[in-house]
Image (cartoon, rainbow, N blue to C red):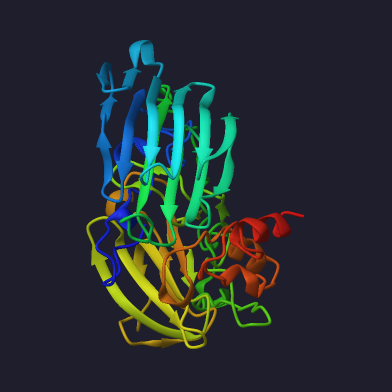
Length: 413
C-alpha cells in the first residue's frame, strides 16, 4: 500500500497489504516459509463490516482470531482451532442501500467468506441493483459498472478468502460529494490453517573409522594445499534490463508470482490500491523507468518504501515492504530503467506475510490505477496502449473507450 500523497487527505492508501484480516492473520493463508518440515500451531481468523469509506470500516465491524465468535450490526464472524484444525467464517449484509444521494441503490448486499483445511471460499449476491435510476437486477458474480459518467462501481470483488460487495468511487463531483470519494458496502474475509506436528529428528549415521597412514607415507585423504586452485571471487549480481519500446521494465528481477488483487478488501481502509508481487526475500527490485527517486525511507504501515518518478510524462510508481534499499538509493537520486533500487521483503505491517513488493501505478502522479495490465505487458516487453492512461473528464457519460477495463480484456487474449 502507499502513504497518502500530500495532495490527498484520505487514508485509503494506508490499507493493510495482506488482506481484510490484517497482517497478523494473513500469514495463515500463505505460510510459504514454514513448510512441512517445521512445527506450527493451528490458526484461524475472520472479520466483516457492513459499510466503509475512505477511512476504513465504519459500521458493523467485527473481528475474531483463534477461538470465538462475534456479531455486529448486520455482521457475524467465527473462528476455531479445535483439534488442531483451523476453521473460520464471516458474513456481512446491508439492506436498503443508497449511495451518493441515490446515485446507486440496492435492495440488499450480502457476502460470505470461509476458510479451512481445503482452502478458502468467498461469494456474494446483490439484489435490486440500480445505477442512476437504471435497473441492473440481481448480481451474483464480479461486475464493473459506470455510475452515469460520475464514477466506477465494482460489484463482488474477491481475492482468496476475502470479498467486498460494492465499491463505488466518484471520478467527478456529484451532489456535494467530492471526486475521489470511495464507499464500500459489505466486506468479509476468512483465513485458517491446520496444525503441523514437529518432525522426528533423524539419527546421524556413524562414520566409518579412518585408517591411519603408514609411516613416512602422506595421508592421501588430505588434499595437497599447494595443488589446490584458489577460489574465484564471486561478482555481485547484475540485472540485464529488458526494456519495452517506451523504456519500461518489470519491477522485480528474478522469479516472482502475482495476481490481480487490485481492490481487494483491507482491514483499516477498505480496498487494495496496488498489486502484490511475491518473491524470495532479497530478490532485487528495480526502477521501472528512467527517472528520480523520492520519499525514500520507512513508515509504520508500508515499512521500507520509495517512489520512482519517470523523467518522461511524470508518471510515478510506489514500492512498499522492502527488506532494504540499494546502496546509493536516496531521495533525489537519478536512476535508469532496470537499475537495482531495493530488495523484496516483509517490512511494515507485512512482517508475518510471505516476502513481496506492494507496487502501485500513478499516471501523471495522480490517483492510483490497477497495475495488473502494465505488469502483464512489461513481462512480454510490451507497452500498455496509450488509451489506458486516459482519465474521465468533461460531461460525457458512460464508459470511455480505452479505460483499464478494456485494456485488461485486451491483454488477457
